[in-house]
Image (cartoon, rainbow, N blue to C red; front, side, top):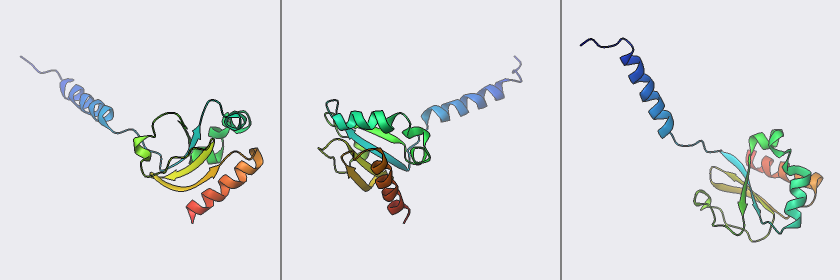
Length: 124
């Protein structure tokens, strides 16, 4: 029986595919966790004024928005971060550690100003 010339190539491709499938999902070094709930009028205001465009901004690319429902269990990977009962609360997290938080939504302009301040604290 002759071995196909493609057998080593196929074996190599299988090994690469296996490694890709078993690799852990990427973890953002920096993220903005938004604690929210469906009945929160300020959460809805945030969504209307900022939510749709946040990911398209420079800050959104640097600290992706992650939404956590107040009524659901606190995520395991945020165990080092103290949950909040006020919505919305925005928690800037770096490698699973809280950098700072903003409680409430003060409006679009003030939100961006306060978030930039939190990011500058992280940089320092």
